[in-house]
Length: 253
Image (cartoon, rainbow, N blue to C red; front, side):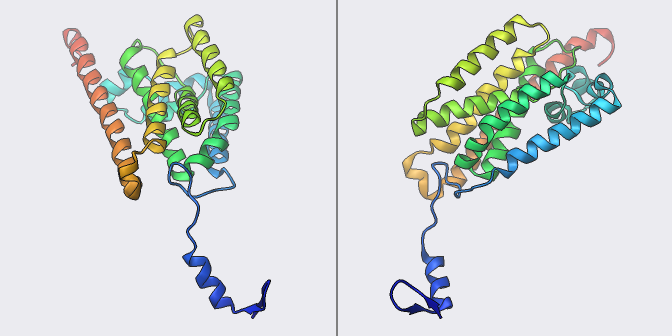
């Protein structure tokens, strides 16, 4: 028996009562979490990859795994759409991206939950890569988690509007980086915008699920994310066909 405020309770009774209590959930439908494990894991993986990249040669690794449109079109190296998001070009580059992930990641992970936050990060990263694939010079190689990071900023703005947060600082940070993207020729602003738009869309799917669908929220959220992924696949295939058409006169296709 266990002592209670009034009398005693048996352990089995306490356990049964705990199982019948409705657990709190966030606005996105995820369970309440205390430790942002996914954020720390993403930072750890990205830093570890950069240390390996630095030891093996930053440019050499970027050429093998970075976002290179011709590499995807000619050699079918589709993994570049994702691996590019874990590579960086310099210490300053990775420092900025990981700082923003450190600042925004824990809050978003607590709102969305571990799984939804992981989906947000990965899909936003893909969105940035697809935008770079479609709009960049196909001969260039680009790397960086900026697509995913801009996706987090877009998601923070969307979630902030839903939860009535003060999002002023994030908007200022976003505006500064948009300007830098247009000023610096080394910045792939296309990936930034792609990640921003996709991240905002994924967050909207998670936190703005219409009331009639709340009872099956997870299903509708999954369908929404799949629709976004489907759109990215369609755009990627369209760009691939376009590049093949460009290469045909050269005898490559």
